[in-house]
Length: 179
Image (cartoon, rainbow, N blue to C red; front, side):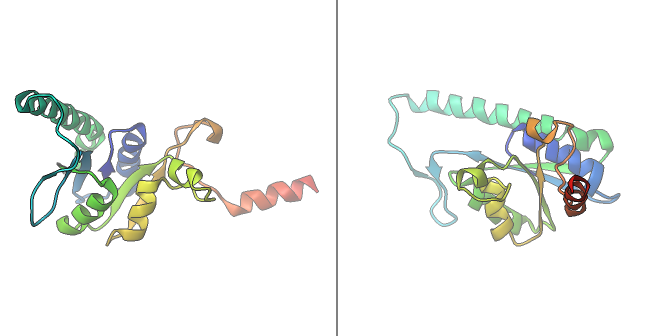
């Protein structure tokens, strides 16, 4: 389950526990933490932005505090897995490009599927009719395994807390009852 510390991610974890996972499944909760440092397999970290006026010690302390916050938040998101007895591991990596790193980690870890949340803002900003966000859209097209995108219900969808499902027959029935 790919998470980004959002309500959409929490919803995707709960959805996976309730609707997708089977007895015997194990889960990796995967989070890509944003960074201003470029990472590469061959060269390690390279500074991406100019160094700040802060001392290296204070910068390290800030990064350590953020890493601790991130680990705590990811553990909170994984609570439904723990409560349902699903074995899981938390895997956190850092990169400046979350989309690409997610797909690379999925391949490196040999995952059989990815479940992720989406609210659909990315597609709407691009003027698409789709409801996927930019990260989920990228993963659908670039991950080496199936990607299940669980769209977070918002107020305009009724706010019922249920996944958004569109059924063609329902639209046809509505049109028939009007005529």
